[in-house]
Image 1 (tube, rainbow, N blue to C red):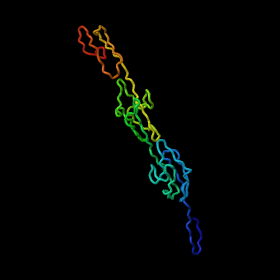
Image 2: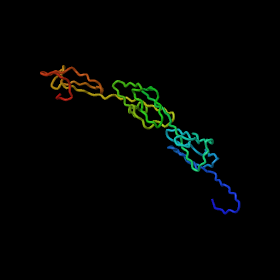
Image 3: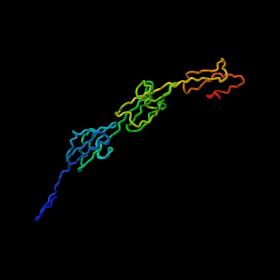
Image 4: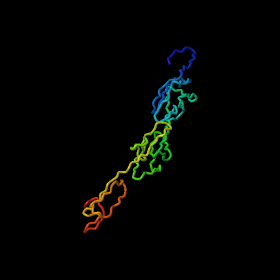
Length: 239
């Protein structure tokens, strides 16, 4: 205040300036936010303010503390809550509150849903349910490759029980369908070489064709060789 000369008895009066709050809307990882100014005792014009957006989350309002803490000042529809506005500060920051969306994963095997849907909260790491947990039986001579994102696909996008770090959907209540993918096991041809001997039909080799990978071999009748006793089969010619 300015200095003034006093003469005799004087009465001095307090001078008041109404607080004008500069309010920053912190979107807390979302897009939007902004700022506005409002006098103490007045109501912000919420009709000119828009809610922020954030992929995978629902906006719950603006609060006086981060992470949805403190007092709500705007609700999810950006409606001002006057009963909670009694801040007499020149600079105020309000923080957006966010709630992760929830969605479901539906596992499908051969056109039928397998097991119960898996409910997932966006932003949390989780594992896909395994085929064995879902009770899926792998057809004979087939291998389970994993999960595709559309029916009839021959290629799996996700492996069995794969950890998922990022959400499969950013939409509240979405139903994500994953389809079981199977592939025929590789087949092998096995040639039995009598290695100096002969089989009962006089041939020196015996061929078994199209044996599925992982299957047990059924050996042919033992070959014979004069002066030797058959001891078994080896991958090495010298035994």
